[in-house]
Image (tube, rainbow, N blue to C red; front, side):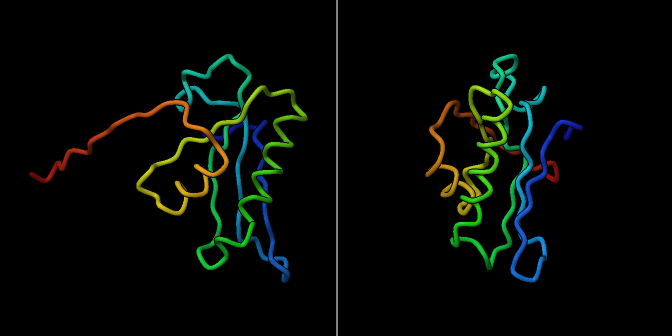
Length: 111
């Protein structure tokens, strides 16, 4: 869930077309519940178009998100991601240290 205080960071290509974004804000009620009331910012959503990945766009947006958090006095920034997302997991693991591991198993309801 996004709030009025969240920041929507957009990266536009040379033609001015939005091709990537990050949404950053204060840690929400459900995600990051262990970090509640610790003045922690959260990257709540992130996306870079597939054909532009690996070109440093995510890093530019991450730097902006960290600057946003620092300017507002947040003590840390966290991101929650699925390890099954190979591209995202590779990116986040280069810039963040693990804080918590959660294991989940999805149940096939069609059985």
